[in-house]
Image (cartoon, rainbow, N blue to C red; front, top):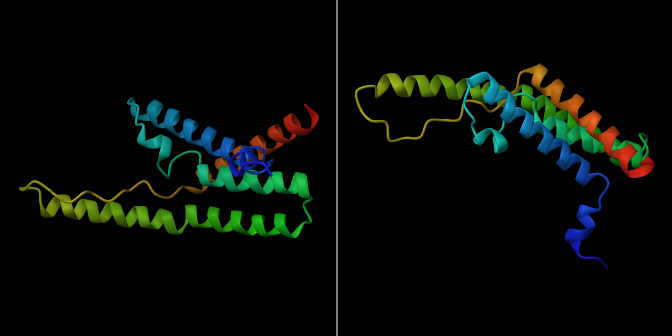
Length: 154
C-alpha cells in the first residue's frame, strides 16, 4: 500500500481543489496589492476578499467529484450540499461577523483614543460580498474543468 501522502497527492479531487484554493489566494493577494498599493502577505492565507478561496475549493471539489464519480452519485450530492453551506456561510454569517468586528474596533479606538490599546483589534475582513463568492465558485468550476481535461484527456 502506498504511503498516505503519496495517495492524497494522486487524488483527482484533492489536488485540483487545492490548486483552486491556491489560485484564489494568489489572485486575492494581487487584487489587494493593486487596490491598496502595498503587498500584504496576510492575504495569501487570510480569509475574505476577492475571490473567495473557500468557494473555489469546495466548488472545484464538487465538480471534480461529479466529473469522476458522476453527478448523480451520493458523494457528489453530499459535496454539493457542503459547497452551498460554505458559500452561504461565507457571504452571510462570516460577513456579519466582520461588520460586528468593525463596529467593536471603532468603539475600542474611540474608548481608548488617549491611551495605547494593548488589546489586538478584531479581524474585520472575514466574510465575502456575494460577487466574491460567485467569483470563487466560477474559479472553482474553471479549475476543475481544466484539471479534469489535463488528467484524463491531456
